Image (cartoon, rainbow, N blue to C red; front, side, top):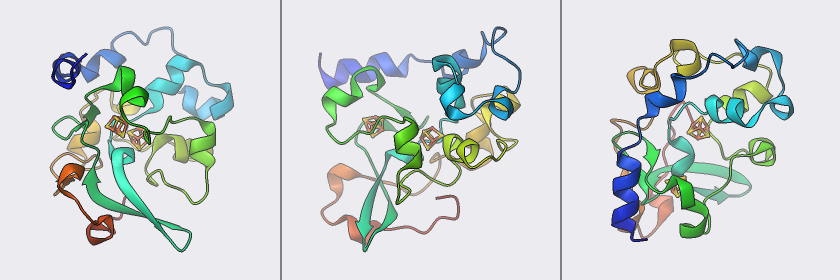
Length: 169
Ligand code: SF4
Ligand code: SF4
């Protein structure tokens, strides 16, 4: 399958579709369950779609620094992966978001990541799609990558030149 075909497939995905059939989901499950107790569907719904985990990072003296460079397979218009179904085959360092990844130190997921928040015993923010019912609310609130000054990793030689200190990382 070509990368172009992958792109077209993912472009057809409607992020709002995740929130249309949630009648069988326990209301506010994120307040009642630990990460270990969530079903696969609940786990997937927990992702806010911010796209910030797809930024490239550099580790310097044991600290993770985010850059404003992004994986070449990220669609920066909707902050979704263009090749989600087979991302691990295509990108060797694409990380699965599992409990180990959420708890890894130094932390490489953004501080607003829903998995990080729940693991820290916090509530989800009001802009999280599970609270608003709208996939776009993360973008409207300004907590996704949408609209930010970003650089495609294919144009980058030295990631250390692109380190950013955004407050929500
Ligand atoms: S940072 Fe967390 S909430 Fe945001 S897209 Fe990645 S996994 Fe989902
Ligand atoms: S391949 Fe992985 S890192 Fe790249 S956009 Fe997709 S999910 Fe993000």
